[in-house]
Image (tube, rainbow, N blue to C red):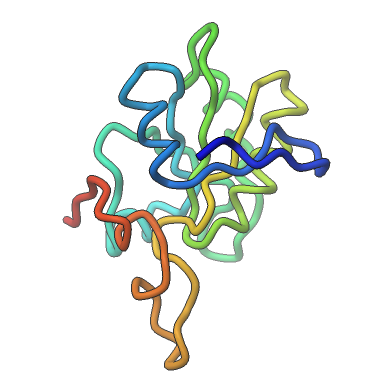
Length: 136
């Protein structure tokens, strides 16, 4: 699957599988933009950089986001951004693009969309796709 380009101020959307392929090949760096609590309680991707887009409580923008993503990515690397469902990571990709980085949103996020019972993890997402993750 090729990246799906968008005209919303970032490089595009990619599937979890393509994002992982790029990370494994060294073409991209993954940044998990969820809160510390989400990563701690729900799970995280080994090797992903933890740079929250918004901070709990209150979900205020993280003043250290810019420096964090700039420090995470190397020269000639793409940036792939992961959140819970692929919404916050769009805003984070837009900001990273404003900083001059080639930034992509990972579709479906870590947990995917909620099902009819409002439960996540059954309709897409990083974990659902069988990609590497850990839970503390």
